[in-house]
Length: 287
Image 1 (cartoon, one colour):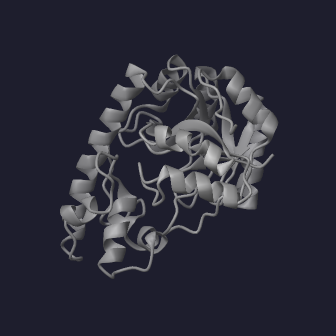
Image 2 (cartoon, one colour):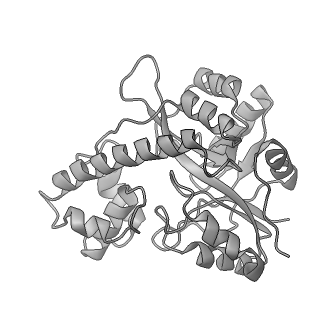
């Protein structure tokens, strides 16, 4: 089976509708796809309806923005935590999503204010590139900059003006990763740490913090990801062996504006079986 566990639709920062995503997954030869929009489950229902027409099984998930607070630092280090097969109506997760959404919105406002000194964009421009109600973020700022003609695509925007440490970059408050793992587990979800050694895009979380995550209920690590070099993949595999946890692989597909291709990295079916065993929901299979 060909399984891609990490993709995004227009309900967060992807450009495809969930239906388009499912159909493209079928065209890419996938047997199963994970829909993991940022901090929301709003795309699930549409994706569920497209399972039969696409012929692709659906594993419902979310990518949750959080941080690991290292050595008492108030800034923290960014962590993207994938949650699979959690209850979509869980109140703890709903509160978490709302808190993250509000923090990201305030951050975008501040970043647009800084960018507007050098680039002719506005908050209205940014919101025009996001579906109503989604958690707004840097990808939507990138879309506004591309639309205004300043850059060719999202990747160039992130490389030149939206990267961590840029003069336009603004940190934001995010929940502690250990609290997020606990909330995921309470909601019946299965937590997987996304691209944990992607050193070109984030400060790395120390091994002792990953050990704390495992003790808190972390299921696995996403090893096979285009933002990991060969050496970084090897490091993730070594960490997984050290703690006796599984690894996953995925495309982190966003549609237009990013080079990620559906199915470019895959997950072992045995790992998916273990996720379903632990999750509150079942995988939806085509009939």
